[in-house]
Image 1 (tube, rainbow, N blue to C red):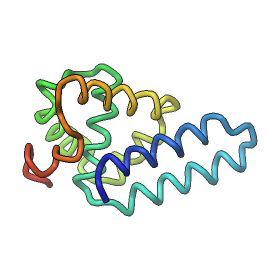
Image 2: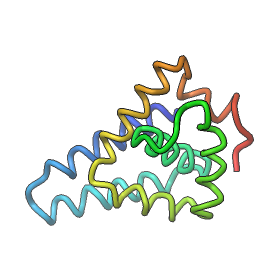
Image 3: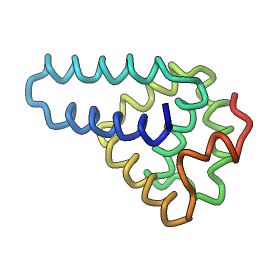
Image 4: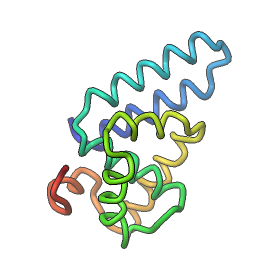
Length: 120
């Protein structure tokens, strides 16, 4: 699955969870998001959290690929990266902002893992 499609799905689920008033329904949505993310490749999880932190403003696009490596080193397993993302109530906003920053820099999100890095 293309990274852009993964990000679109996570944005939709995160937004849905954020807007859900019923705690039980919100938990089910978050569990669906967790299962969806944990079913993806490790490289996808690490790039997704990298895009999240890019959107949050932790670094710029120029240092993004070093940050991608930092994410895989810091979280050591995709499951840890997923847990970290799920803790962010503004996940959907961070991902949207990250996509916007990539677009402004002329970086196609779906080429990140194929043309810019060796995937873990």
